[in-house]
Length: 463
Image (tube, rainbow, N blue to C red):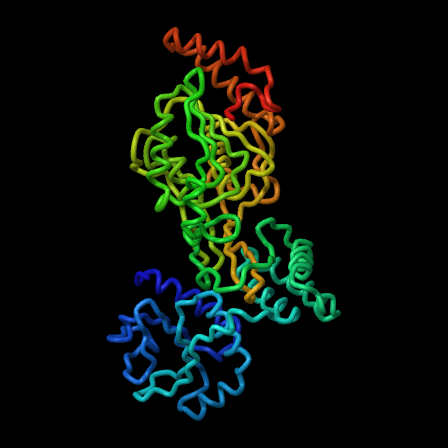
């Protein structure tokens, strides 16, 4: 983990820990690595000491500097008063940040030997289920801390707390609890990314997660390689159709850090075509960096402001612009048609909404799913997790986004017929151009075949 990533993680943990304890109970949180254990640095509460636990390579120590204590005895008194919170924090670190081998509670500006209470990782904590009441309470804490609209989060949490007090969740199995809690949250926050679900046992994504990556659940970079590579980074088809029309069928938007060479190869394949169809009808989302990478092929330089994302945890807004350089040729001065459906979601919607707002593509198909909020999935327990939208997209052209409404197509047709419409438009563009006679003949023949159907699909659609 790089220093910048460590400091970012430290800020997130500091904010969430302070939200869990009473005001003034925690002064700050410091996250230390193996290298820090040797030298320390100039952060408050992070002085080097030789009597603490040994931090091995790949491990982290999370140090909580408490308030209201100045020696070992008063620290012990603090721990007695906050025993439940300490145990819960250790459990959550074990679930969400497996590298945090050590959790330490200590005091401000102590001389060695430093008064401390150390809680090592306990593997048993990652396998234990929680009673429904504790699971609901933990979910609501995460909602209040991270949800992109704080007022709605508070309203939803208060409504669920009233149900909790009335015993509505008592005795529920985990599948029923997840379904019912999600339904109750949606009564106040009708956000398709917000969801409680069951999960496999074991550690979850790093706590509190890498900020800035949208997607259907957890950040793209946090997904294992086994998710990315077998699906070819979401690129299901890249081909040249009759009439010299390019076709890309994208089922996900992968991060270019991993998928860049594959994306570049796909764009190289269609670079010589006269029109391009990008099929997002089955695209469930992915990375905003992936959206920028794909879109940058369709703009001439770095001067196109594509999107902004506001992050609630930091209060910052990050701008996303087209890239000054992409590997391979750009796709310019030719029409682009984007196919959409009700299943197009999240990062897939970002892709088509951005191109539509910039006037760079014509959208054909159905209104999309309506999820514009980047999301992280956080374990509640060994068997439950909550997906919390922590940011929102703000398009620089429209000043808004597609949350709840979906992206509206320029040409509204059933998703099953969207390819025929787009392919017909692309072929007519080729026929109206100065294409050589063999291509004109090929385009004319392909256009004549379009009304026919075969195997339940339009004859012209790639199979």
